[in-house]
Length: 145
Image (cartoon, rainbow, N blue to C red; front, side, top):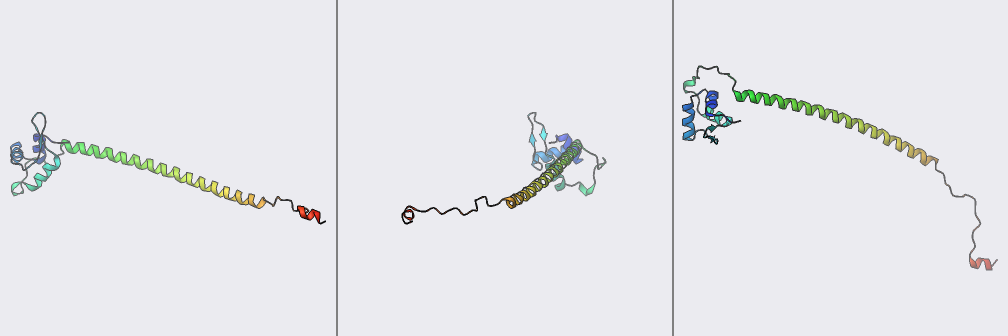
């Protein structure tokens, strides 16, 4: 979310004139919206502020930890994202539990099928007739009899 010149001045605890000079001189890069108002990226403002500290380390008389509109919006977004992460973790854990249960069930079935296969192999016997059948004699053998 980009800041207007007034919002940026309030966040930087500087005057609009100071920021306007920095914008016009190229010290701060920003864009103008369709109405001709400056739209300043908060990261760009932060970069400019670190490069241009207050003279003699003196800050304005305002409270140093005053929360801006952007900070409150960001904190709400962070809170929402943390809730989404928590929801996603709970869903992932639930799905993992389901998969573990499914794997255990499949292993049990596989073990049962293996035991059944071994049992059936043990029951199988040679089904061929074990009596000695008379050997068939060929055509020539029947003549020599």
